[in-house]
Image (cartoon, rainbow, N blue to C red):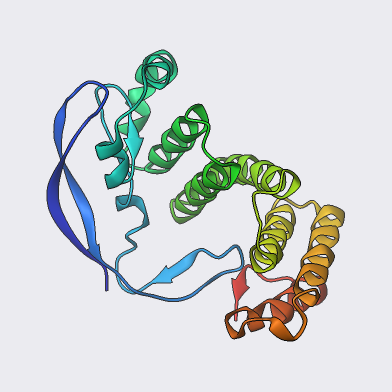
Length: 221
């Protein structure tokens, strides 16, 4: 079961100190087809990322310690500070992940990191029953996952297989059936290239790909 603890964050942009609820511990059991974990007890997902309500800086705990460059700070003030009202909307914690994803992009981080942030934003939007935002973030995520594969960020065969599957499932959730099937077949090919060296922890992937091709589901068995 997830547990939270009260702590503080100091914004590296405007130096505002503010109180937050941070995740102390959590556990999960199973997941959705796009790898969103099912947590025991209260869902902690929206508490992993925090945002400064003064300027809009958003990130994980380590991001607050890492600081931000002058170039990024200028973009935060230009594009995020005018939108801080979004962060105060009780039913929209997904904006924290969106802001973090944009900051990651301005920092020239890997496409995988940016994609993962948008993917998690879509998870939070789903938990808040905001289908419009969920689809928006899925589109942003899938584009960057595809880019990561194209430019060679996924250097390991296992990672390419999982990311290719994830791209397929995101296209499926966006009702792009043909693209989804193409990526599921690509994921299968990537997995088969592992041959006898395929790790046990990836044994689920073949069954999941077949399931999504034959009888798609939003849940993973």
